[in-house]
Each structure stands twice: as structure tokens, then as C-alpha cells.
Amino acid sequence: MNDTHNGRHVLVLPDRDAAEEVAEALTERFGVAEEPQLVRDALAGEDDAEDAQWLVVVEDPDASYDAAGLAALAGEYDGWRETE
Image 1 (cartoon, rainbow, N blue to C red):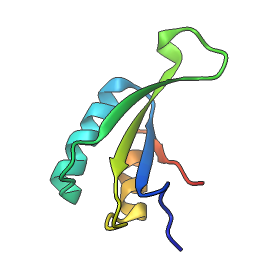
Image 2: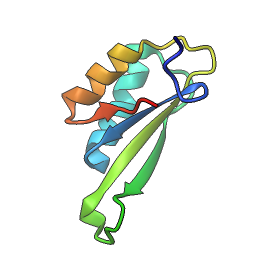
Image 3: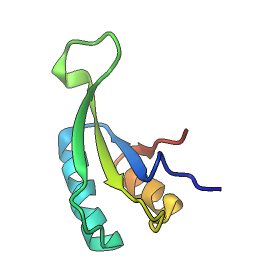
């Protein structure tokens, strides 16, 4: 079973610093060639910037990255990997 979101993985992190560190670690650990995209995701109904999560979007059209490894990496920063 292909466990990616249409050729991408989405990692959810608690803050921008964690997201930036994960994006850097993706390059080092997984050899991610294309720089991951960082996206601020305000929680539903919240206007306060402090309540925003950050998404790290990893393009993976060939499904070559290990989903469990990506989830473990996100977990090191109190985050998780989104699953459909």
C-alpha cells in the first residue's frame, strides 16, 4: 500500500524552529533532493500565531522515502507524519 499523499509526505511540527530543523535533517538523513516546503498551518478557529503548527511537505513522486523513518524523525521534534 502506498502511504503517501499523492506523491508527498506531510510532517506536522509544533513550531517553526522544529519544522526548520526537520527540513534540514531530511536532507542529511534521507537525501531529499528537492528542498522541503514549510507551511504555517493555523489551527482551526485560532487567530493567535502562537497556536500555529508548521507543516513540512516532502515531494516523493517515486515513493522512495521510508514513511516510518519520516514519522520517527517528526516524532523526535514532538511532531507526526500525516496519514490519509
